[in-house]
Length: 279
Image (cartoon, rainbow, N blue to C red):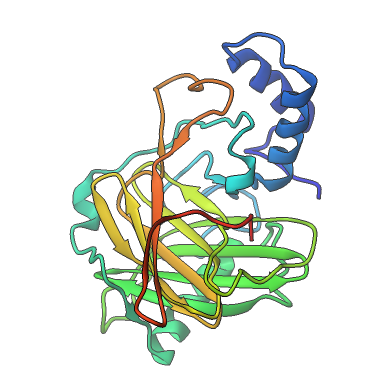
């Protein structure tokens, strides 16, 4: 897969990674892991005011962000770059709820055009992508689009007060791989894309047929994911990674602070469940 990262070419990205690596010259094994990471890191299209096809339509407000960190769990052993972005005050997400509600068809029709506008021009084939999950938490909604071959997810977080047709503050992320998607084990799950905007994060993945619920712990927050038809998605008002400002924290980069509990259809709760593989 050809990937772009905030306008950097692969060679410039390699230089940036080397300059941020406090451990010195990487080993052959580290290089191999870093190459795997580059396959799974996907760029966010520049926000409003750019000439990219993902620019927000007139009349919709959008935050300007340089990069969305979008990385699969299997790639967390390799170095990643976190570029600075605009950070909004936490009060913007004051209406957030740990338990989601399902968007109605009418609400999806209102939000979907703005979401697809932002996803357009990325690595997700919108001609074939289908909407698999759509949830609301307070005044913000998430729509998750997917293709199974290649295994790609595109999610957007948008501000839409219930009962209105106003859609703004649209942020998005795209991630995945070049091969076909694999289902999760019956009593397990896979870790898909983790999108960290610093002041908000989104993650999705595959859930097994015997998984009734996915609970995500991110720092002090506990989040009940939306689960349907073998997929889950959730967002929360906070980071997914613990990071030290201005540099990578060791060879593996920022540390993922997300853990998972699974509730199975027979009532069993699996605490600190581990993903079987990237989705």
